[in-house]
Length: 185
Image (cartoon, rainbow, N blue to C red; front, top):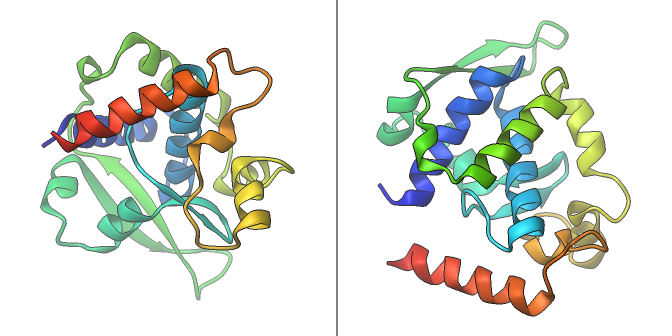
């Protein structure tokens, strides 16, 4: 398992244990906020995932597909995904997540842990629907992607850069290039 996969799996466990009602959709949004905030501050992601601009918000397509595949052995070692009928709409299903093991925070840097704790605290009680409203705000990376490219395109991390970003665009691009190079090793 590479370091990014290890971080992803441990981040999943962290968020499932440290937020309320963490189903798949809420988890996707928690990971999105973690990755995009970390990128904005430090020029690199935590999980290395690509997020697509889907109708309901940013979705890590690979993780979505992995969770849909019940035979994903690596993921199944870490969490149990339970499919339940939606009480309000019997045609729909909810997916509840339950950790099988304790998360290993040693795989994260102190900055990554700090951001994960911020995100968990901020969205502790939030529903996936409430979080969708935030990801859909005007000029959010999701919104910019929808307006400029349309649905189903990958959301560029550089869209997270704003007036609060302390790194220059060149510094961010250098760090992101190094991250991608390291991930290929």
